Image (cartoon, rainbow, N blue to C red):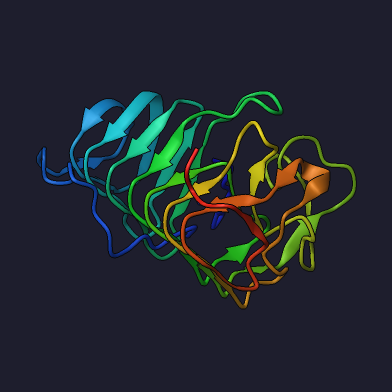
Length: 219
């Protein structure tokens, strides 16, 4: 999963669907390193994933909280909810073409985000993906190593590489069991072939400006 919501994944309000294991363990707060298996987790402050992580329930970021989840495999059986001003970085940060198993059993909803770059790439989502009214307002200024905006100077104006909603080639599909819904994004939600993008695999309907889908969600 490739997400930078600075507000890199306010990516999200993930609502309306809870995995079957959501009540299997008690809720807890995270203010530091985390790994292993936990019940529902609320992040206050900065919470960094240091090893493979399973959250058997919901992942909630309080206002202005930070969740650093690039690297290890992460499985959330419920929903991901991101508060105002919070930052969600959720993905498998490896070499190009080597993406890992980041999975959300519930819904993935990105509403009202403003920043540099955001994307939803090569995820497995058990519910719907709903991305609406998100706006890129800055872009890399000159040469920029790595993934913008990390380590990059910014200039005002929309970043044309933003709003990627896609698989990462045929070998790393984005599978969405429910619907793929896109409205009012700037730039428009896109499949960026220059970034290795390919069509999403969607079990339900592709609605609004969403890029074309292929087949259904079956392997």
